[in-house]
Length: 209
Image (cartoon, rainbow, N blue to C red; front, side, top):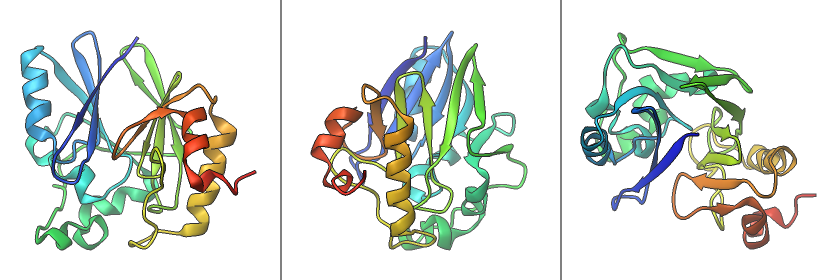
């Protein structure tokens, strides 16, 4: 069983999730939480086996630079790879920064439904376009990391580059049809909860049959 730890940054309230087993970890969306991640893995003598991005916006990828290791794979959906090399797409230019991933980094471009194997556990990707063209969720048993597609009582913006309002509603329908209502959701910002509770509280589900 994977142990899940959440860290939330004060800056932009970005959630990072550390998935740990056998002193090995996967990091989902390091965002602005790089120092907390480093302290965590040092305190528990852990080693990073991979870094997963639910999408390529700067607030979710920023502190990758503190964790960089050419041997550690970076997982991102294939439609989103270009965000890692384009400051206008990843929005780092809006922060007066210029995030461009080094060419020597090991990027694993994933397809919809592809699986990530970790310490004899399996995580499954699910393509959820709308917030960005290559946004994805990660499913592990009854746990779902939704990135900025689904929040507790809202959804991600669709007015940024490659965003699409129609597609994000299709993605919400996909979530509703794919996941058990008892699934625990871990969003990219704010608090999480069980899908059944979120569907009752979140107004964006009201028009999804």
